[in-house]
Length: 363
Image (cartoon, rainbow, N blue to C red; front, top):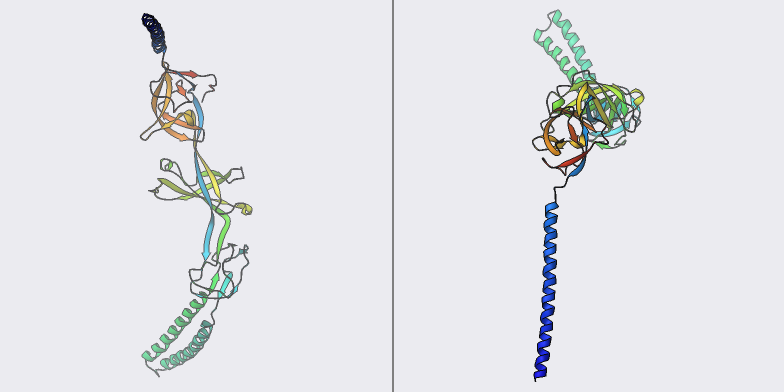
């Protein structure tokens, strides 16, 4: 019994020693880890971003307005009949040049031609009657009233003939101007209505360039100003003169619609083509320019970040003209300022930053 008691006591002592050893080891390690955290927190400093920057300088800048335009025919019309009828003949060939007044399509007028002959025959009889009445009136053989009736009947019959001829003219679709006629949409024998388009006629020896510019540039555009445009894939610039513009700003797009014209020598360009319009308004040798990527647009303003005393400082600016790569700054920046041009979306006002001017080539 005493032997068992001694063994139990011995094992209890061993377990107690083990527990004390484990606790001491854990407590010691925990204190060390806490010390490391505190040391790390003490040594933790705000991170500084390394950003690219450039020194603002004066530069030469051509104030150029860029716009997308469309080439239009000088004259264009959809050929449509004035009255319904059956097509008896088509006088034009698709894609060919036609002259003003050429007969293009003839509708059936079989019911009108007899009416015209009847009216013309009746006119001859009335004119003979009027001539006889005139002779009798001179000899006072009839009253003036009878003579006036004969004269009015002749006039009335001439009006009837003119009306029938007008109806016959409506059965003939003629070219309203010189131009190239397109693809026809009808065939001989078809019965067409006034809503049917026979073909399209276009005058393309002269073309119009229609484009729009933002409202803020509307006062710069003047009549007879010269612009340049190009049509892809042709990389050449062609001159064009402004001939007209809308007298109001579009209230939906806030743009001004402008029209220019040019001689389409050799029918080089086709109506409907997309073109790029460039208009140089002025040249300035002392412009402050920045890369487009450095500008941050806001709901109420536009701003940039400049480097001052190790920090990124937000600065509101007022912009002028711009192109694909650069923007003119009218207010807010001066030559000599250090402009941050990278990491714009990562920085905030007052943040500590470092700058790299190794690639600075000026603006």
